[in-house]
Amino acid sequence: MKHFSFFVAVLALTASCATTSAAVKTAVVPQPAEMTVLSGTLTLPATVAVSGPDSLADRLTANASFFPGIELRRTSSGAGRITFTADPALPAEGYSLTVSPDDIDVKAADRAGAFYAVQTLRQLYNPATRSFPAVEITDWPRFGYRGFMLDEGRHIFGVDQVKKVLDMMALNKLNRFHWHLTEDQGWRMEVPGYPRLATVAACRACDRLGWKDQQPDSTEYGGYYTDDQMRDIVAYAAERCIEIIPEIDIPGHSQAAVAAYPEILACDPENPHEVWRRMGVSDDVINVANPAAVKFAKDVIDHAIDIFPYGYLHLGGDECPTAKWESNPQCTALLDSIGSTNYRDLQLNFYRELQRHIDAKPARDRRRLIFWNEVLHGNTSMLDTSIVIMAWVGADKAAREAAEKGLSTILTPQIPYYINRKQSTDPSEPLSQGTGTETLERVYSYVPMADVPDSLAGRYMGVQANFWSEYVSTPEFLEYLMMPRLAAVAEAAWTPQAERDYPSFVTRLRQLLPLYDRMGWNYCRKF
View 1 (cartoon, rainbow, N blue to C red):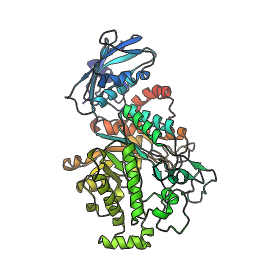
View 2: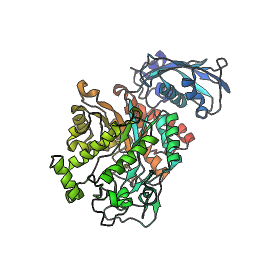
View 3: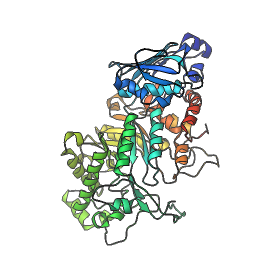
View 4: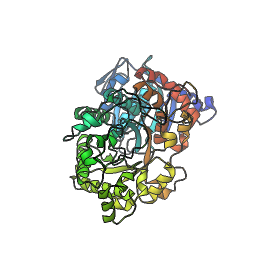
């Protein structure tokens, strides 16, 4: 429960923060698990003393720019002191925060907890007066997995914009950046031994993609990330307590790679292949029965493991047509050899080979594999029970099915968590997917794990917003569609369901818009 002071309760006549002065004064998103608003404020001097163990206090001193107008000094004495203390009794990523009229005291479970306390302080801080409201907060996340996915296969936004996205995630206490790096329309990472991924697969003959009667344009388009750039982004994310999960979408959504290496990847290498210039689902998939194609996949995975030092790897698995496998002698022979008549099982067999390759690695290089929920259409007993199902289409039902099979799952419902879709029916809304029904309120109103029994609850890792870039080619449009809907998903990921309230969220959100402006973010104001 949130705890409000007597004075705030009198002013508000209710314990809800939906319309109270407390909501205005605190203006924290996501809403903390427990909060007491006290009387008074703390006004900081121009120089502030910061004390505590380096592993916690450096979450503040390394981000001094978060607090314009003050200088932070690592010392145990001084006016306006901010003190960090480790508290192992707090839940993972949790923190407690006391702002009194004299100083600030932060207790944190771990490095992430200290960082999230700093994010709360950022939102409470008034740079015009160098002041904070007096509050007591004890806070921890509802879910351990709180994600955002960015598709850069269709359009690539570059290092600076990815870092800006990571900053948006950090302010909202999100901790997993799912980086969708490969697609039919473009391949965005270099891989040793496969130079044509950068010279061919990363380039296409159009910027605007074709869709239905809309034809692609003739503007050459391309780009990819070097190893150094990806490592730089990994380090930047780590400073913000964000782990990056790369997605190598194979064997479907792979036409760009097939165009670069048709001799080893195509089911019909004798035919011409190009990086795809349209939206939708291409049937030009990888020939999973060709040992050279399997080696290619293993080589790409090895490189991804080297660049991204975390415990998960996403291999896609969605929207993979089987038509080309059905007409390929290698594929039909392989299907027969594994004793199946379901061509979807060729995909599962492919993943099984890749999983065995990963499992043979030293412990530090092993990864849990994540797949979109279409893999449930095949014989999942071919795969290890450590796999994670990312549920997007029929998300609640698919997640429940995965959990009942003993698999971990992440909720990422297409409706309403695909925040690349239009967010308004206003005629001025820029062209994107959908009809404008995915408003901020609708995104906020989705209830994760509704009616999930306690016996399955432990299989639900968390939630994630997804952003697909078919229509989105500029950073400004990306930010406009992301924010503030990303904040709505973040509150579902962090805040206990019983404490979520849309009117309160909007009230708090409006108080944070000056911070968005200071950050230079482009955001939608239609709420």
